[in-house]
Image 1 (cartoon, rainbow, N blue to C red):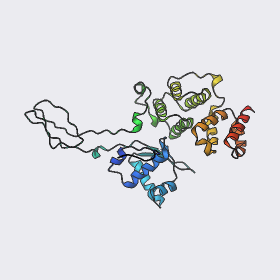
Image 2: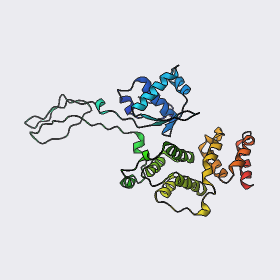
Image 3: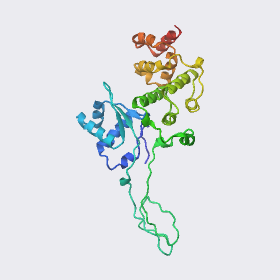
Image 4: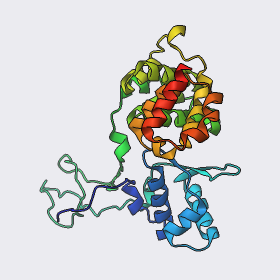
Length: 308
């Protein structure tokens, strides 16, 4: 069969289809959250939005299935006052009880290979003559798309991970800030995953990541350089460091107000480089005026503020 669909898509774990402990609404809810997450590992849709997408009229129904997904380990929830909750998506794994077993016959005494009553999709290991196969349960491991993405120096990093340190040692707010900073910079998913591995092993923290990302914007580093700077602890000289890296997060929030610009990754990156050296107070004063300008006027006016 030829697939003629347009490639406007997102992905979910294959294992989601195989989970027998999930009902239709739970699977569809996870799919909706994955759609909202996109390239991130979290989503923050409103309950009303999820109701519309699931065709459910009562918010309580959605809340019930959200809680069910959390209890089954498929999502983690970060509640926020005055804003939508953050939903972190975990990889979907098939429980051992859901893995099918096959009736694989034992070898005969004369060493002949059985050709019947062998389950489809099963595999048999060669065994010595006159030896019976006693354990026929198959261990099926499901992998996801992200498991195979561009793992930079994965073996080297794995050797350094300490078993006594993991992301549970960090509060969720810090983890969220780190992930937001990486996302705002426009790093690829594989690079973000490798940087989070460094965070997990305790090699880098939030402030170091902010400093490196700010320097990367000034020096136009690519993803590989950002990762190496964090992994190898590159020295960042004072003259090339931003004057106030702690302000950049607030400036990113300011830029999000202009959704048309923020949604364009290339244009957003260009604007971020301009606003680095513009005081946040100046940006806020010009916010209303900038909102009425074309993209060309917007960039020109920001450049004039930079030189002011």
